Amino acid sequence: MGMAEWREGVQCPKVTQFLYEAIWKEILAGRQGELADFGLVKEVLQIYQQLGDRDGDEQSERSVYVTDFASPFVRHTYQFYLHEAEDLMGQHDCSGYVTEAHGRISHELQSATKYAAADTIPLLCGACEHAFIAQQAEPLQRYFEELLCSEESREELWRAFCLLRRVNGILDKGRRSFQDLVASSGSEAVGAFFEGE
Image (cartoon, rainbow, N blue to C red; front, top):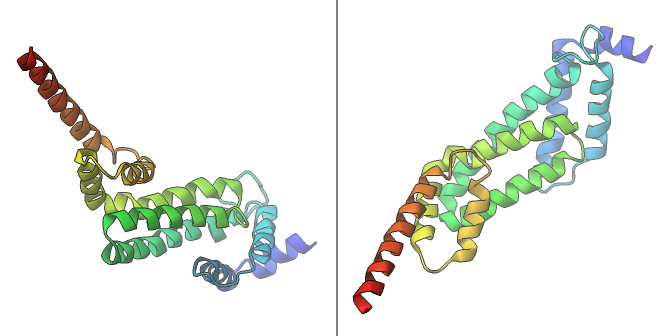
């Protein structure tokens, strides 16, 4: 009875948008370090999942959960973190940015497990990684290459590697630079060895 009432009376665009905005506001509060009631958010999202498809088919791609929450949530999360990534890049050097970006991605995914469906987490992870890594690829790749050529900062190199490896293709340029560096260093070492004989 309750599900039928929900489908007939609550699933209209104005109410759907109002409910989504209330959920988004609660999640934003948690992202900004404020107290957020993720338990309430989870309960509402579980109701969305129980509602299934708009026509009653629980396996449909047009499920209430996907259309009313997951799709707009992932899209808005990407926009939110894209702005934050740009701000962080302006406020920090690359070393600081790598630390902050890794922390924000980890925090977001940890928080999302408290309320979102398991199949939403990979989509959310992809949105965060695209905002923090792929959209900031150029300065991050330069920084990684500088670290590769440096004798110091192995810990920073490891942190940068761990962040960049999350997005396919980002490390390709660094991999080529590293191969060139190893080949050059190897040639120099072999040359020095034979000169010393």
